[in-house]
Length: 109
Picture 1 (cartoon, rainbow, N blue to C red):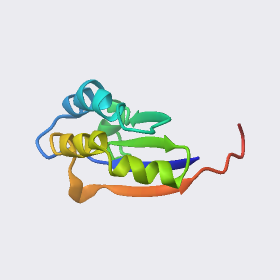
Picture 2 (cartoon, rainbow, N blue to C red; picture 1 turned 90 degrees about the vertical axis):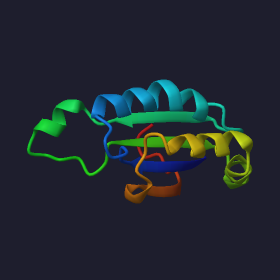
Picture 3 (cartoon, helix red, strand yellow; picture 1 turned 180 degrees about the vertical axis):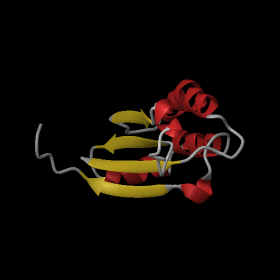
Picture 4 (cartoon, helix red, strand yellow; picture 1 turned 30 degrees about the vertical axis):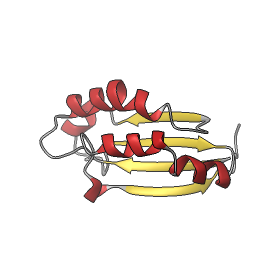
């Protein structure tokens, strides 16, 4: 399994609630159509943490699983991935993201 991990921040001017709602309800269904995608998980920062002394470095993490590197590469070239990347402009600050392409090593299953 190959996993793309996306640590992301919301676009300037978006409230946390707006960001989370858009990501879940609008972008989620777009990303779910990516060719070869086996699993897609959004991890949203708990809104209460923004009022605490702990300031999260990111607003959320997206995880996208693919069978192998070849499946991932085909997905990157797909029209569905292009549509998802285009939509990111509506809610993500691309100047403040981190992206990892990784292979999972399950320690506890």
